[in-house]
Length: 357
Image (cartoon, rainbow, N blue to C red; front, side):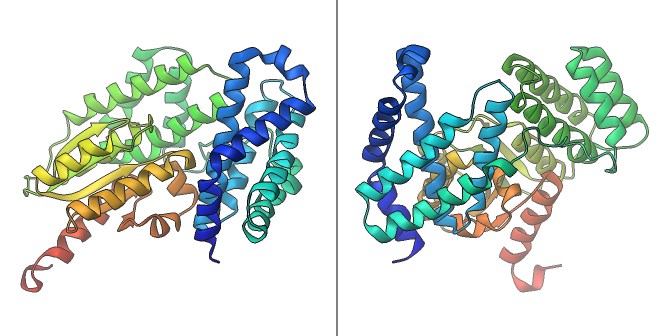
């Protein structure tokens, strides 16, 4: 059997696997009922569902690192909130028992191999991952100043930092790539290590979104060439700021842009693809939990409009650069600037040979 078949077997038994793991976890730790209550039990069920979902994605991609990185992230979240990790490790061991009990031997062995690797590596996962702003990177000083303004809730100062950079001739593309993108990732890391709240994270994102709008009006786009780019976040994906940067870059390069934002239903995207002459569809996904929705979206678009090119991006694809091939996309871009280059290549490839540059 192939890895895909093993993964499908896990998926087909997911409901039973989740309930089996949850029941055994609470049987071994009856104190959890009092400690967390009914809401905590439901949250635990959701977490176990995520564990199995990411495990399945790692098996489909034949890359255990997808599961390992997810576990490392989870460990960091717990440790920095003062939560013991024993329950998480015990949950993984019970997951292995459930897989052995409910799946065929070969499929269970394949899934358990990935879980065991995470358990064996658990102590090596960093409690506090390093900053996402590389001090040696271009515009790192601007990024740090901008972040400091955001964390101080000083919108006026944040604007001054960006305006100062823009006055030196730094364009929207460079600011997005070297300031906004690393700062947004750092904001996510700060939430991960419990240094900021969700409200602060949302505030930082809202200010950055506003800054992009202010810079955009100062940027003179190329003449529109008629090609349409649709940018959408798949169902369940709430992180849209990166895709917003991509759409601004595409418009600056002469594309007509239709940006749908976060959490876009698959049916709505299919409606656009059918009604409009979409040259390229950009799909954004930040976490492995949304990969099934990316896969479904791609398959649905292929069935509706085969000629539409599909470009994927987002944190999960940046972390695993070869993943886009296994998910069925035509290409991947790590940032807004590279997305514009890839989309331009799509157009050149589609043009008659005599018209190609």
